[in-house]
Length: 90
Image (tube, rainbow, N blue to C red):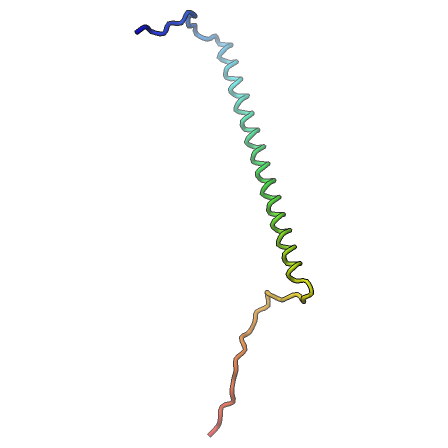
């Protein structure tokens, strides 16, 4: 088997080429960070929109269920009614 030989001789990169490579890598990382931040912002906006939609749906449900009825006091503590009979004295 023959070894894969290249017709182009390998050379060591110059200082300028190395610096250019790292500058490009830094730019790529910065762009990825900006994209991640944008994706986070979109996700938060979607979350807030869905929360508002849920609240709207609940309010509409309460309005349609409560038409023609007096509002109920659901937060009031209800006391149980006990039946008591007078005790006969002997």
